Length: 355
Image (tube, rainbow, N blue to C red; front, top):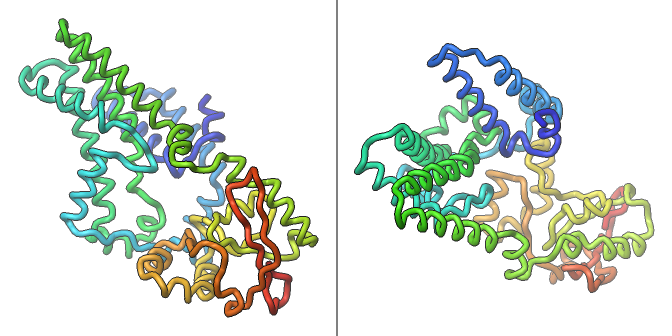
């Protein structure tokens, strides 16, 4: 299991922080209990080694890169103290979109109720562990929010790794901490006996209902979002490829109003992309292409200049296509697609064909 898991999960988005936490847990046992636990340490080392082998390109880019990368222009420490504090509070109560916990409606009230009871009783190892988890939960939210505080800027300017790698994501451990706290809280309430045991059952049922209702399949249907089949629109893009009638590696495409990954999925070579790590020179070159669009929206301009991974422009059709040297070739509709695709060609292509 330890060998297979790295092939089906993300080191950057989760397991770096999990393995760091496990390493600290091993170190705690070593210092406090004088226990080496070589099996535990070996498991951590094995998983870390496999992850680093899988992510060798990222590792080489971060440690041994010769040319500057896009992340070197990241600016993310911009918040003042009170803004950071409000962000921490919001994270503690509502969670984060990248690491959904769905704890606000049921789990959070249970934690508050249990905390009140624990404070009144002031006894028991289980009670102390519950407090530890609650404090850790709060600290993770504070860490997440204050990572973007201005106070970090001098250190981030001096040590580029602090800017290029998002250490705020230690808060991705919160689901584990929150649900462990929920379990301990329910156990504490269950031990009170009487009506509390009925309430514990109801708390469990309600949380399961919340999780089912927040399932992506349900949420996206309610909001009318496309299915995977509609999103990637394979048949529609096959029609586009046939219409162009040239080998896909002989021309480049750009996407306006739809995600570049759709074209990439369908085998097209794209000028634009959503990529979190690429040469800084490419960012600057691409910025020259989209400069006039960025000038129309200061927030979008700031987002690109300080982040530079995602390009979001106005929806199609392009009303000033002629001014931009573009010509509408054909419009593609498909009943199984979420998109209406307007195919434009360059009026005066230079070098390779451009579509």
